Amino acid sequence: MMMSESKIPEHSEFSVSYKGFVTCDSKSRMPDEITIEGLHQIFNTKKLMKQAQSDNPLAGRGFKKPVTFSLDRAEIRLTQAGGENGADSDLYNTSMAKIVLAKDIDNNVYIVVRRNKQEGKFSCHCLTTTSKPKEHECDRMAKYIMHWVRTAAGDARHRVRASTSEGDILGGSRLVPRPRNSVVHASEPSTGRVSDPGIQRAPAGGLVGLGTAHPAAAPANGGASTAPSSHRQSIIRSMVWYHGAIDRGAAEQRLEGLPPGTFLVRYSEKKEEYCLTIVTVNGVPQHFVTVTGVNGKISLHGHKNQYDSMIELVDHYSRYDITSDGDKCTEPLSGGR
Image 1 (cartoon, rainbow, N blue to C red):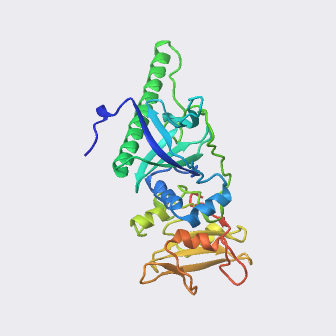
Image 2: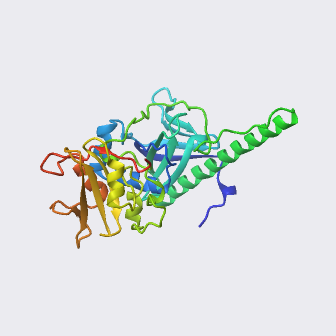
Image 3: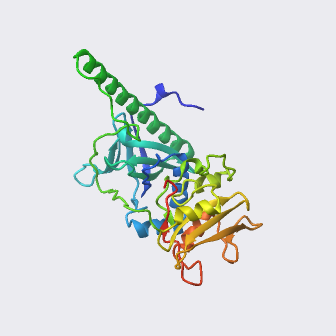
C-alpha cells in the first residue's frame, strides 16, 4: 500500500545495523537505481567487497553494534547511545540536500550521497533495520528518506525562484543559476567517524567505479542496441568498463594507443555474447568472446573457469593472467570516453 506523504512524521528514528559505504564516483552520469543494484552485489559478494577494500580500505566497514538512524526535513544522522555520561555519540550526518537516492533491496537500504562540492563524487551507504518485519521497515525507511529529499529539492527551487524575483524587483540583472549535473548542491556537512575518501582513478576491474557507463550503453552509430535487458544485464551496463553494443573495429579504435592492460567489455550482436577486448603486452588489442553454459555460468572461449557474472569474470582477470604472456585487465577504459 502506498504511504500518503501527509502521514510521514516530521522526525523518525530507526534502530539499524550500519554495514559501511563504497564510493560510486561518476562525472558522466548521476548514480541511479541500476548503480545501486550493482553496489548491492558488491556488498553481498565477499570477493567483490574484498576487491573494493583493496582500493579503499574503509569500504564496507560498518559498526558491530546497532546504532540509531534518524531523519527529518534537514538531515539524516547516525548516532550511538551514550555511555556513562549519557551523551549520544555522533557517527555520521549529512544534509538531505546532498542525498541523491535511497532504495531498499533485499532488506537493505542504500543511500547515495554527494561527498563534497566536487562534481561526480558520490558514496553509497548500506544499512538494515534491526526491527521486524524487516521488509516493511526498510521500505518505510527508504520512502521517508525520498520524501524529504524531494522536499529539500523543492525548497532549493523555491529559493532560486525567490532570488530571481528579488533581482527583478530591485532592477538588477536576472539571476540565472549555473547549470550543474546534480539537482541540489549544499555545503559540506559535519561528519563523525565515517569518512569517505575519494578514489581518483577507477580501480582495476572497475568494481567500485559504478555508474560511469556510456548512457544506456548506446552504440556509437546512434542505432538501437539489442544488448540483453534482463535484471542481471542492467547491472552490467552500470559498470565503468562496459561500452555497450559496439563492433570489433570500434573497440579497437577506442583502445588505440593505450597502454597494455587497458580493456573494455562490449556486447557482440553478431555472436550474441559479451566480448572482453584488452590491449596486450605487444600493444595489439585482443578479443575474448564469452560462452554461456547450460548452467547459466559464463567463461571465455578457450578457458575452463566459469563465473556467475561478467563482473566476477572481470574481477578474476584483473588479478590473474588472461594470456600466456601475462596479460591482465588492469586499466578499465571508461565507457563515457
